Picture 1 (spheres, rainbow, N blue to C red):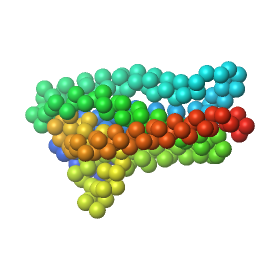
Picture 2 (picture 1 turned 45 degrees about the horizontal axis):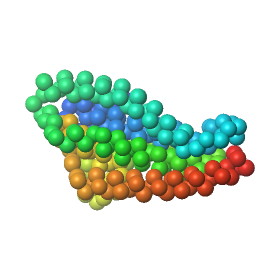
Picture 3 (picture 1 turned 90 degrees about the vertical axis):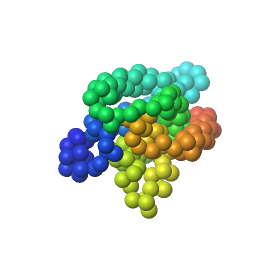
Picture 4 (picture 1 turned 180 degrees about the horizontal axis):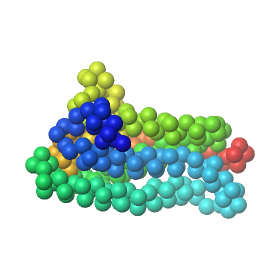
Length: 219
């Protein structure tokens, strides 16, 4: 669908990278983040029965979601690597570089971001149940504010700061840059994403811990 709609119909440039490799790279990174966020955002509501019967550190539940999603990410990443190696040996425009060694850092930042936002949203849904229905829609909108289907270079200058302000943007762009040599690698952007992730994670922990003491009265 991406190839048809964004590649053939919209004709959005991919900075010289084969479209299927470009889209697959963005989707692989984004899917891990979005799945972790979506599944952790209803921790309290989905596990209310379990939490009400036995006590254990509640934070284990969202942490297990983030960890288990690494399996799905690994499968998608292997598919990405298959396509990557095909084009690496057949396309001279593919120039991987040393920054691809930062992949573990990218995963940690994405997991931390998703966990932080998920904990905050999960706490909010104990009082505002309808918020859960907006999560899926909101995550899809967030994807279009992230350079998954387009490179940052194609964004008009006046809108580029908004895209760069998205903490996931630097991760997606750096991932693509590391494997293809095309795109934008920003050390400052990665530092910003890392700091943002740490802050939102600690905010999420505080909100989550406060909510778990009284959530059984509202769920």
